[in-house]
Length: 135
Image 1 (cartoon, rainbow, N blue to C red):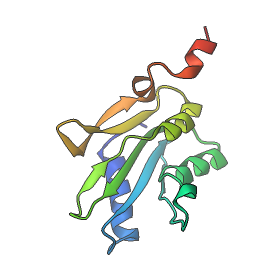
Image 2 (image 1 turned 135 degrees about the vertical axis):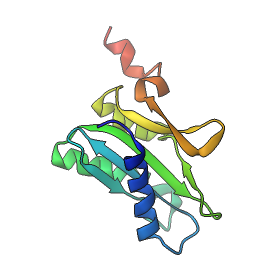
Image 3 (image 1 turned 90 degrees about the vertical axis):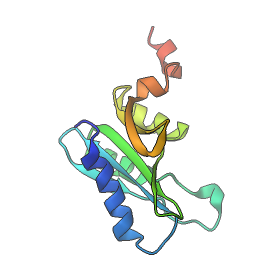
Image 4 (image 1 turned 180 degrees about the vertical axis):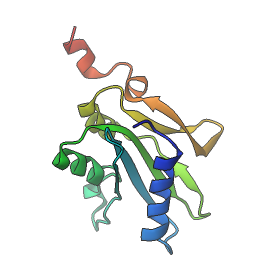
């Protein structure tokens, strides 16, 4: 499945249901190749050094189910109740690379971080470290 507004809306709707009264909250939604949407959020931790990204639970679920991830979005709601689009961090980009450079990721538009544009992992990481090993 390709990245689309339905996937972005799934992440936002989850945050609104799961964290209705919290100012700051976030979630990630992933598409699998068969159109299934997997959603996860970051668990709270007393020690910030052990916190996980919002994407990790859904990545683990996809792996558990033996599914191929094709697209991802991560959103974060701020104190004004606006949802920002978050580019996958470098660690999550590495995790998604398990499914290849064609995985689509939502990234914020440069003119409005509440709106998304699609980039493939290969575009986010044009100098991916494994590229030199495959030549």
